[in-house]
Length: 295
Image 1 (cartoon, rainbow, N blue to C red):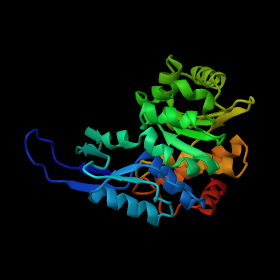
Image 2 (image 1 turned 180 degrees about the vertical axis):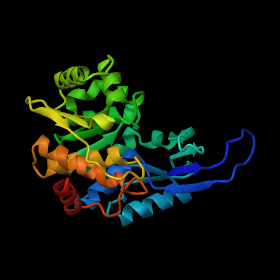
Image 3 (image 1 turned 90 degrees about the vertical axis):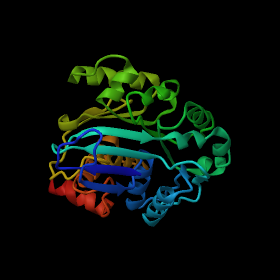
């Protein structure tokens, strides 16, 4: 659950400040799952929530978006994962706290109980919020399905290093690519060098999200290029990267080449930027195609 507090007043330590508090369904993999369902795919979501108000609300919201949540585990006594951010009068985040401890309950033993669902999936999407033990189980029990990965953060992405050879598509930002490669990624040349290194480790598709620079994409077969962002009126940047990854997975499932998948994915991200929350309620393949065509 994403919980954001905003105020137009000066933040005072040790005192209560008037402002606005908003709740929104979040989580990288959950956002991707919702986007894929809105794009017309059958999606099964595996995660863990607490037996609390946030957990029930997240499962209901995700189910209503068209995602199969029956494989999610409700953990009694545990708190549903949440991200709390505090924003001052300038709009910038002053403080943030994340509570992701419940994800330690996604154990190899629990995953083994979902082996049949995993075996029959056309593709997997996972993020590096998962523990090292969970990632190890998943990658050692995969059955040839392409794996799409969001590293989540420069710190957590290093959990992925032993398994890069089994990653089909990696969607990362500059800092995450830098943490994986081990060198600074501060120029276009470095972006290309980092991507070639990732291909050498076995990654088939690499897509680096580079903010205003747009997206650099590269396929292991040698195709590569830059894709500019689609200009839109931005309401919030939250969830745009998740929409980008959902668009890439959609393109792969539609047998599109990477160049076309990236264009569609950038359209998903652009549409999401115009929403007030991390998922655009009107996301659809038709809406994205219309936006791409208009651009």
